[in-house]
Length: 410
Image (cartoon, rainbow, N blue to C red; front, side, top):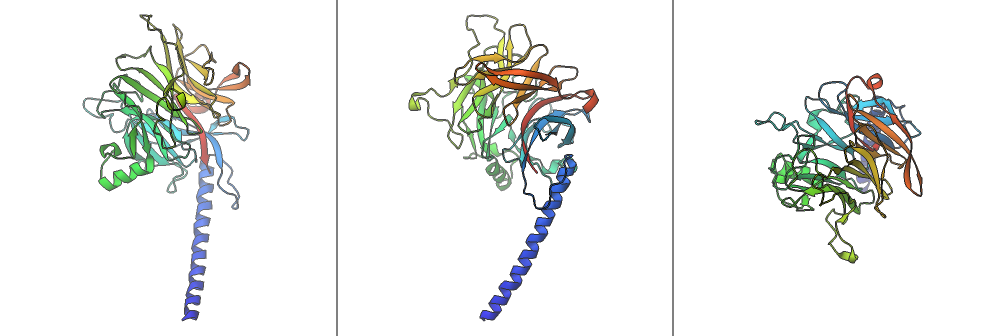
């Protein structure tokens, strides 16, 4: 009996080892195929997966519809527009993509559900998530069937552990978008935190198409101000302790929101807010102070804030007076603001992983991506160079916009 058991264990061990070797070999082949699709040299078979710097962005270069692309960077960390990989391919508008911190997934907004509704709501956004490395067709765009719907909402940002996202959405779930631009806040917009994997389980278990249709801890409203103020454009700090966002009055209408300001919400590891007044600190805390309640026609606004990797600064799009939007930064500790760009209208800044560069899109015809190289002194970041990344010569005639810098596991 003992001998039989020993023999069985030996046989199973051999078979198990063979299975492991086959799986490992397949993984190496898949990784090599992915690397080839992204224009990379295949890694040696013994090499472990690594995180490589990349930029997710939206482009119309290959079609009239807006799709999500990935732009690789050079070994020195500079964006390389010549090395891009298309991730989505359909007739809808996909954008505001964000790479998960572990480099394996991407969350993005799309109007594929609402664009054909009657009456039309082409600017309503729904959030989708997909594995970044598609094992079926690693050299081609990821099929729609592998892009999983989460909920109606937009401007998602990942928690540092890659398990949750914060996003803006209608408090009631039915409110109209406030403006006609893509990924808009709604007239009762709040911030929500979602456990992505739990959301997907709820969808499958309850056979619903939106996990907010089922109440539970998988989605939490963390602001609950929909009838008083509107919150949007959240970004989760790299250390997980803070979320920066835009707040403005619920009564604002029209394209611009002149009383919009940046706020910082301190949060627990699960994304729930730290109680206001804890440790004698106000929560949320106002970060910018540009609105003048005595000015009948204020012309200032903040949009799209994003944390620097070290959490010392927030970059954002700022509008001051008659000028168009430019790229600004604010020192979080001192609340001192600084304008980095001038000239054309500029929006959606994103920091490089090392905090020395900012990519944004500028209002050329069509819109294109630009890069700021920065140095830091006692006044904060100073622009060393401002260069155009994409143009008709290296990306076709389409627009290239809404970049988000992160890392991809290859």
